[in-house]
Structure formats: structure tokens, C-alpha cells
Image (cartoon, rainbow, N blue to C red; front, side, top):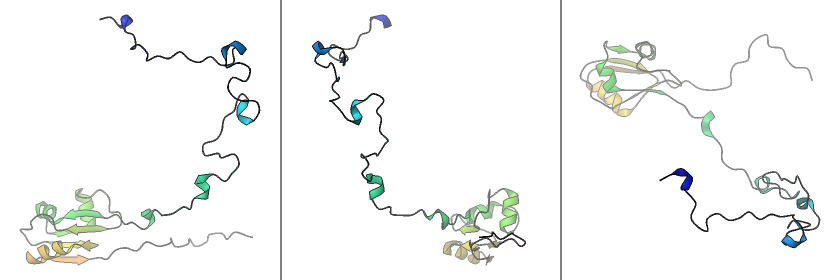
Length: 165
């Protein structure tokens, strides 16, 4: 087997049609482009979605939907089973950040109920799932909810210059 001996199967490669090579070729003179018009001249190219000046379809159709990225909240999540394995018995969002249990706080800390809790712990977080609350209270611990921090417009800086109209 030699690479120089390889050939495509018979009938696979078609000879390219040579247009604009004289009247005897059958595709001479206008080279199959017709007589006049924008498409007949050299250098013709159209923009994607161009419809000859008519309002393009992507502008005629209504735009629907929205992105909820502005309204979505992303919480740092910790499970009760993780807290059971950590040293100490009081946990706050700041202490969990220092220990490296969570990477960033985001919109707050949420404690979920996966895993077992075998000791009494005190947890301070922004949100708790129902199962996490039940497990913490069943073990004799306390769960303090800080509440979800509200997102709103940023307060205006004092001393900011007003634009003149």
C-alpha cells in the first residue's frame, strides 16, 4: 500500500464546469449569469439576511422572551453533612469562607439537608431548607436565618456631578 497509489472511487470526482470560455462551450458570454442585474456583475456579494431592500425576516418577526440573569440569585451552598465533618460547633458565612468550604458568598449562604448530623451545632446563614432546619434542631443545635439580601439600584454617590441639559 502506497499513498501515491490512492485514488478516489470512479465517478466521485466531477470535472469543474469552466464558464465564460467562449460561445462553443455553451456557457460563454454571460457565463450563466443572465443579461443584466446586480447578480450578473463581478464582485457581487450580499449580506446575510438581505432581501433586496425588503424588511428582512429577522427584523419583521417579534422579539419575545427575556433573560432572567438580572433576577436570578446564586447562593453558596453547604450541606448539613459537610458541617458535621468540620471542626468547631459555630458556623457563619465568613468562617466557612475562611475554612475554604465555600469559594464565594454570592447572594448569600444556603444550608441544605443532605447528609447526617450527629452533633449539636450553631449555624448562621441567609437561607435554610426545611430538611436542614429539622436536622439541626433534632440534633439540639440552633439555626439563625439572616434573610436574603435585597438587590436594588446602587445608592448614588454623594458629590456626584449632575449633567447639564
